[in-house]
Amino acid sequence: MNQALQNQLHGKCILVTRPVAQAAELAAQITELGGEAVCFPLINISPLENWQAVDEAIARLEAFSLFIFISPNAVTFGLGRLLARRSWPEGLAAGAVGPGTAKMLREASIGNVIVPRAHFDSEALLSLDPLQTEQVSGRKVLILRGDGGREILAETLRARGAEVECVTCYRRTPPTDGAFVVSLLCNNTLDAVTLSSSEGLRNLLHLLDTDSFEKLLTLPVFVPHQRIADEAVRLGLRRVVLTEPSDSGLVVGMCTYSWSDYE
Image 1 (cartoon, one colour):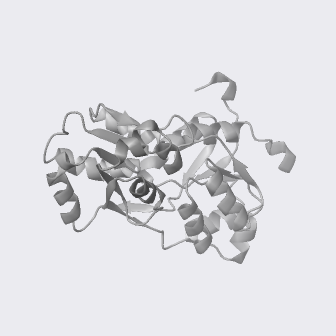
Image 2 (image 1 turned 45 degrees about the vertical axis):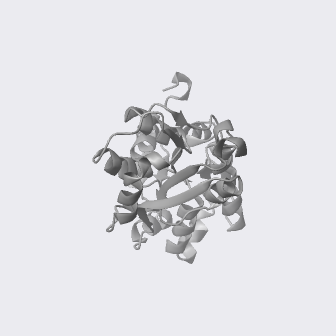
């Protein structure tokens, strides 16, 4: 941890809203900096009940020129099932939207990993040379993802001439009981909220009543992507703070925020 940031979050209670499997690292960084992290996942991740489509794709692995893993959860569920059945073909490239996904792929001994260096989203991945028309036209690409989500990656690759298959390898569901987060807000427990997706933001607002929403409006909401910031502003949030990407960007954004201006 950067020594200059030590204790910068002392006394601050921060809501961490990442799915359970991705929340621990951000929570640990907040705690190390003197803050208190309260975890409340706004998207619940669960395995499929029917794996037929995933298994059929695994059986045809050599037909693909590129496997794209849309998230760390796609690696956990999709690659985990694949490696339990067979080895990764030598030379097959793996695409990752962000550094967390890429790290998990490399830890699984996947050598040829394609990942953006900044602005970790589908658009950034699509800007890379291996995904341009001359590289993907006429080739088969598989995208492993959760149910739902944005279609820009598949649509753009198809427009560039690729034959794209999208296979769901995990389920995403919203929380159904918001009593805990409503209580945190109404009791003035929280000093800030972190949000890592527009979907999570919408799930949060769905859980809140009028009073808790009004409390949310008084808090800084830290987001690591312009698209989430734009959606937050559109939905009425007043103190949206855009940070650099990933957990490290959120942490630096919180540590450099002018808290005293609002106290």
